[in-house]
Image (cartoon, rainbow, N blue to C red; front, side):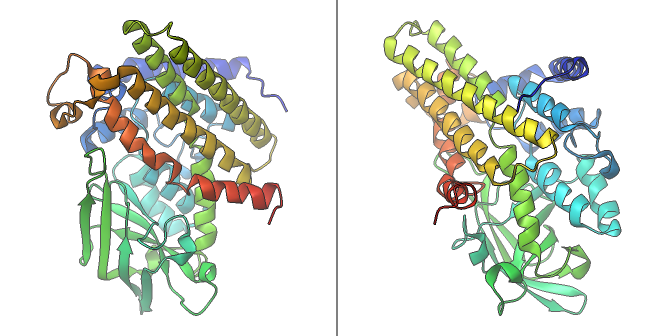
Length: 391
């Protein structure tokens, strides 16, 4: 199946490129280019720029207040977005909580939550992983016991990105311990200002604190904040994960990074080194294959097919390529990237060699890519069972 872009598609792509290029602040682009840490204000101010064109909610249908882009337009938007040094989108509200709410929520929930997400007023986090339940979400232990019009929530979540910034969390909880694990899970929306919630940052190997532990101690959550039916949260979680994995290839972003590394190699006089040239060429080939896979699944989606478990292939290859690029950048700069500067990473101190200064932190941080969103080992099991029918 071949994907052919029309003149209207190409015009839309050019429109996106022009708007993003004209409105991306130079200092923000520099921080992204050199892998410096972004603040909540960096993210929200940029998302306000997108929201001005209703492109913050780029994947939302018109019925939910979004721009109502076609699947092809959304792909082209993400391709243009990734080609520039734009911040990685904050997906938890706009690409995760939002689609679950407008697909499975009732009218009151849609009216209450969707405007704040669409207009970039609320910051969200995801309450899935637990100390004993990461890729195996069915093993989660956080409980929600119904008491009249509220659930009493107790338990712990971990690796919760930006929980320290979040206004809201969408959370998987156990509401029935007597049934099959997947049948006893419900999907709650939790106000992070609720009494009984404690957030503790986790300092990661690169020195950042984007991950957090979240503890629930008798937290009361209104029953009206439950999405869909009690015990059906697993269905909504699977829906969300398919959306997440389909957007996790990061091909356009990786192509931009590859071009940056080529430029670094030229500047360092290493572009003609046989080993460097071989690795650049190999990554170029792998990236072309990933882009072809994206277009193949896009063509199928445009034709009315759900990408389903095949989206796992994008997650696997996309994250592996991103990690390989971060390794190459470190190898290219060698000992120059071993100098660790918190001041540089926090953008409070300049550097004469910014590409090298941000390289090692990015390499360390991106070890997580093949784990989050369901580890790549789990993705391979999904493909083996559901596509190859093995085991």
